[in-house]
Amino acid sequence: MSGTRRDAPPPTTSPVPKVDNAPDAGLRSINHYKRALPRWRYNLRQQAIPLIRWETPYLAWMQEKLRTPALDSYFAITANLGTHTFFMIGLPICFWCGWASLGKGLVHMLALGVFWTGFIKDFYSLPRPLSPPLNRITMSGSAALEYGFPSTHSANALSVAVYGLLSLHSPDNALPPTAKIILECLSYFYAASIVFGRLYCGMHGFLDVLVGSTIGAGIGLVEFYHGPSFDAFMHSSSWIAPVVAGLVIIIFVRIHPEPADDCPCFDDSVAFAGVVIGVEFGTWTYGKIPSDPWETHAYGDGTIDVAPLGLWINVARIVFGVLVIFAWRETMKPALLKFLPHLFRLIEKLGWDLPRRYFIPASEYKSVPPGSRLDTLFPKASDFPRMVEGIRHPTTRGRSVSIGPQSAADAYEALAYRERRRRESVGSNQSLRSKSSNMDLQGKEEDHSGKGAQTSGVQKPNSHGHEKVDGEVLILGGEEDGDVAEENELDDEEMFSRLVRPRVRYDVEVVTKLVVYTGIAWFATAQIPIMFEYVGLGTNHLRLQTQ
Image (cartoon, rainbow, N blue to C red):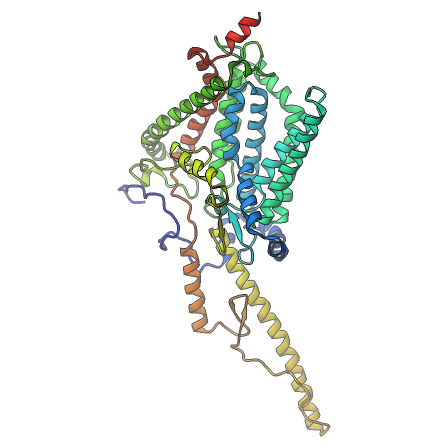
């Protein structure tokens, strides 16, 4: 390792020229994953990938039969309702509008869904369904960089839908029957729309959404039946309980599998881990801090009626809370990114560092470029004009239809597809040549005995013949012709050069995300409701008026 440090490279955008650390276009996929994964994980991947490949023609047929411009826009837009970014924007509002119990339940479900689907994605490193023949319809630039199995969208949608349906049928639910029926229908429609939309958009296969939906449904069941008792235990325990919970979460972050390719799944898992730590600490303080609006509601097991405050006061509460969160993040993130590299270099010299693949160690860069975006979980202030513009023009809001590999996993799968077709063609050709040789031998024997001429109607193909299949040049026999091999190599280089490349990531990001998102959740659940009381936006005066 060089003794001098370099300025960290800025994030890259697509397309970018081929760089030295780009995947080698000549590296065949089977060797790539065999080298990148432990043998036992590689063997499990090899057992699962035939299922992913088997689905592709059926998905392509379904997409070809169903696609319309209107459905393209609908499923691309509604896919946002299954993202963790969508829920992250809405979760703080649950706590600020008096629904702390619901907000905490949603945090648990979404965090578990994001973490475990990301865990499995990186563990198996399975690609999304092949494109082409599929078209990928998406509004997210980072989604295509992730692995496909299982679907996080499906897990999020099913966990929320199952939890909502169980809540509607709970004996404690006081909603009118008509409202229950309407909400129940909306829950079913929401889940079905998100799950089917992942198939329609070509982003996932049947196995992806099936396993993702199963994980989500299980999470929803566990949270509904066991979440309240867990919350009660945490709140009634001493400070040791949230500390232990935080340590357990950090351990799970540490054992998150290393992916074979540069996949951003780990980033979201780390961010949500910080959210859960902050929520557990924040809700543990309920009833233990002066001016706490939840002091009469133990651990938030109940609601606070904020309707008497009026519309504008409630809007002001949300605006105030959002500003506090942005102030925290925009202050803490640059401070940590400036301080932590020095600490990490010291830790690295002592041999205590825990390196992670695809993260640049602090000893190899001088500083993190200012303004670097470390995640897409929570929007930046600069994102809001684009979001508003998207609301004004929803049918064209960033929707894109892409054909061809977008990530390294896609590219390696495309190479594997070409290699598989070549082998099938070679095997078929060898079978034909074997049959031809037998017929030739039989014909010669008949000629030698004077019984007739050669009877074989099968001509021996050229040992260097080629076949054009789905735009790929396949070798029918013998070794690759030099010109064809060179052409394939150039095609491979072009394919890898056009990939959407993940941004440059730094080792200090993991701790930075944990601290920043722990603080965001802690402010949202515990501190901002108390701040409301001091700036005239609180609810305690309503309770005092009724006493």
